[in-house]
Length: 337
Image (cartoon, rainbow, N blue to C red):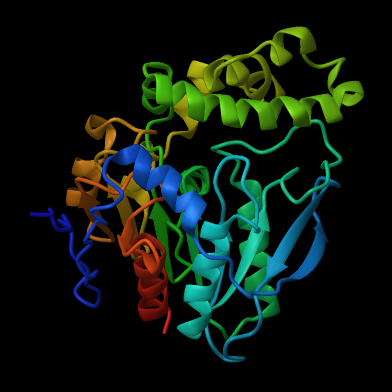
């Protein structure tokens, strides 16, 4: 029998439907990797907008087609080394569209297919860019309700942004959702280093990160020990040698302490829905934030035994469904209506 969601704090206006994991995708790695492979392509066509940031860099925003000219708008934040073209992002944008919500995906710096202009990239706690974009949306569309949705690293960024805001996110968004968040960055890195599959995932990310460093080699050479950065084999090593020094942290450990979203959850003051699997290979179950969710009435969580990382596959092999994308989109549509 499949374990159903246990919403530890329940928002009375929203109940997620039960998650029924696909029997043909057993285990965390099947859920994680098959989801990436079998999500069908969407017909969604983005309109790209480039905006200049206050520090003289740029962000590429990918806008989905207008669903309802008076309807809500949702900012979507992708995961580590993702982009607006990742199928889970395109899928959730389609789910939002059919529910009358227009989405805009913020490609993190350097993730839109072109290197950014400044030496630093993005990281798990860099909240200035999404704050800037949310404020821009608010100014451009003052009469429309605004939500936000983050996956993995993007979810960590979103939760930190809301929690560090002096109003707990009130005035930025009406509601937020976050899927498969690495709430404790140090614990997540440790878990990835402990298993063969964890090292496979890390290797995938590291190839992309090293490639970006090489593209900006001339700019970064005065700031980093590039030989050491390019020799990094784990995310922790990369953060120690690149992320931390580029962003003013003393070390990877300092970066993780300052930027893990579990320390910001208690301060969130807007309805926020967290979706997580206990078998997520990117975070040990002990690091799922039970207590903050129980103590903060603005938070609710659907926590499942299975689902992997940004997986949550249901249905059949020929007609799969993706529970987290459907339910996070439905939550925002309900809460922002």
